[in-house]
Length: 323
Ligand SMILES: Nc1ncnc2c1ncn2[C@@H]1O[C@H](COP(=O)(O)OP(=O)(O)OP(=O)(O)O)[C@@H](O)[C@H]1O
Image: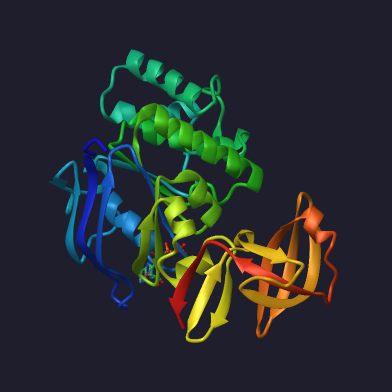
């Protein structure tokens, strides 16, 4: 692989609030052109890290560098970063043009250049021609596109996004993910994204940092994290997972990696508890001792199954954890 340039480096960073909460000894390198997502349950420290990068929080100790330069101590506006929040934070009394032009005017960019940049950026976020509108004349998804456009106009070295799509409904959220991915690859910009939505993290990211209680549990590509979860928490937090007791070990296997056998052969046996047809596949729950094992089964096999029947289960790809 060609040598990749490190864009952001977090070095042994600790941020403790007065009450003792926060994050400790965080180390992470993010490469140029990457989308890296911090994923974890509420309160695990995702936003704390993002805010220390953006300059909205001071670190307690450690260092953060962008392109090799420490940014510790710089206020947000002096950092080469731009942050987009969950609430779009557009100014309601200004038109979209004025909202977008504001930061560029402060930087004394000539008007002709501002006009051209805004036109180009609105096209990029699929919002051409809305310059004269006010934010309240737009939907949530449109306002968030404008907020992203406003950040990108300042040509940040690093774009920081804090749950930017969580206020939007499911369909728009999916569309926004695709658009963000396209914008990111068109501009080659580096993006740090925060979410508690595992599907969003899986679909958007080059790498995911899975967090729990202020610590990193695993850093990897979506496929690595899905196929080889490093801890039980990662295994249960991402996707659907069965945990099957076997002696002093627990076997973690995804429903799509269990094959049900009608002749009773396989690694485990059990009794069919429920059969649910969900379109092109069927969810079959099988009771095995204390455990209920969820299996995704093809329609043709499920038609041969009935509740109460004894079956076997072959375990495909799986991970073993100590109990
Ligand atoms: N200003 C603050 N003062 C004291 N404690 C705080 C402060 N902000 C956050 N915390 C605590 O620090 C921990 C991490 O919070 P943080 O907001 O980073 O989590 P998060 O993963 O982003 O959660 P969410 O998804 O709910 O925003 C939590 O226990 C939280 O209660």
